[in-house]
Image (cartoon, rainbow over all chains, first blue to last red; front, top):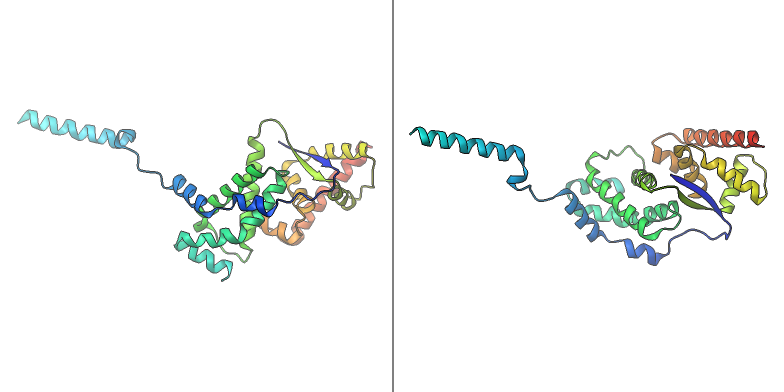
Length: 68
Length: 178
């Protein structure tokens, strides 16, 4: 929750050019964006659906093999 | 190149987003910095998040003739509000006394002693957060009604009306208090 209070020094609350420069970095932004949006694919063991499908295929192949 | 042209290019190739970043980083950083009462590092992080969100949602952006910056301001506004919500306890934003006096004038509240000022700030703090946002944009960020209207995607007279209704409400609360 935000609350206001008054300051009486009458100074303008403006960032300096140096402060702006310190945070202005498009390559960092691009890197952060890539990291957030293009994460690597999940390994198979972390994807329950794919994992179950592979287990099922394995069981079917095993049954076929045992019947032969 | 116009903003619309760059946006169209940036939708195809992300590299072009850098041009928008170059154009608008400073003003968005200033806006966030002032809203946070001068917290530099937090302002830097929030500004970066603003641009990441803009980049991620650029394909959803529709050019309706409003300045591209108003869309960025809207995202920044939401990011700052989220920051306030997530802050534990109350978050204090310092406001300039001169700007506070401008607000009082517009609300037709006469000049007052320091003690009364504190009482009025207390009443201000009791307003809904959305109302505070509007007053903050108008009086403490010094935005025009046109700029406010663009951020909220409303008309200029509508922005003006909303601000003056809130001032009327504040004035009424102040009169009741006295």
